[in-house]
Image 1: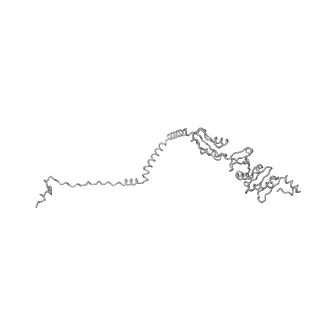
Image 2 (image 1 turned 180 degrees about the vertical axis):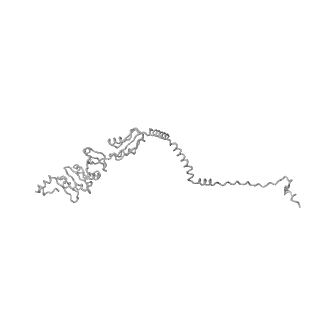
Image 3 (image 1 turned 30 degrees about the vertical axis):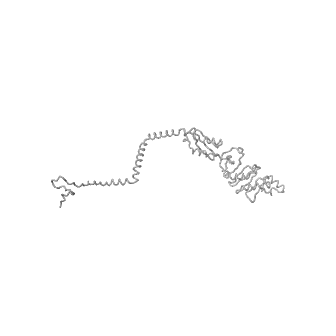
Length: 319
C-alpha cells in the first residue's frame, strides 16, 4: 500500500518544528469596541429640555426678539436719539404726503343750491391746494351731513387732484310757523331752512302749533284731501299734539277729529257739494264727534236767524 505522503494528490504538509522556516498564520482578532461614556445628568436634562417645543420656540424666536427689543430700548433711551428719529420720520412723511399725485387743488360741488354750496365750501377744513392727507374726509362728510338742507352727501377724489362733493338736498314741502319764525320742513318733518317772511314761499302750505313738525305726513294727507278748498285754506293748526284744525278765510275753522281726519274732510266736501255748507256764515264747524257734527254761526248770521224766528238773544243758542 502506497503511503499518503507519496501520493501526488495529497501534498505534503509543511514540517513543524524549531527548524522549520514555515510558520502557521495566527488567526486575526477583532479590535475591542470603544464604549461610549454615559452622559451626565445635567446634559441629559438639557437634551430632554431641548426636545420641548416651547423651549425651542423661545430659544429660536423669543430670545432674538428680546435681544433686539432690549437693544432698541437702550438705544432709544437717549432723548436726543428719539428726537432725531421723530424728526427724520416727519420729514419722510411730509415728503410722501406732498407728492403731486396726493395733492388736491380743486373742489367741485354737485346737486346743491347756491346757499348750500357756499356752506359746503366754507366747511372745508384746509385751504386748497393741499394734500389729501390733510383733509379728514369722514369728518368733512359728517360736517356736511349736519347741514339742515342736506339729506345725503358723497365725497370722491377724482384723478387730476379734484375733490367732488355730491349733495342730495332735502325738498321743503311745508312751512311751520313757530314762536321764533317760520321753518321749512320736508316730508319727514326735518328742518331744511328758515324764512323771514311767509310770502317768500307762497307755494307751500302752512302749519302751526306745538308738535306740528312731528305730524307732517298726516298734515300733507289732510291738505291733499282738502285740495278743492285749498284756495280758501290758510293752514292747519295742531291742537294738543293730537289733532288738527283746518283754518279757512273769513275766520272760519273746521275742527277735525283725532282719528281719521282725512275721512272727516272728505265728508265735509261731500256735504258742501250737496248743501253748499262751506259758503254759509259760520265760525266753527266741529267734526270731532262723527255722529253729531255741529256748526257755530257768526254773530251776524245768528242775529238774522233770531229776527226770522222772532227769538230774543237770551233764548237763542249759538250752536
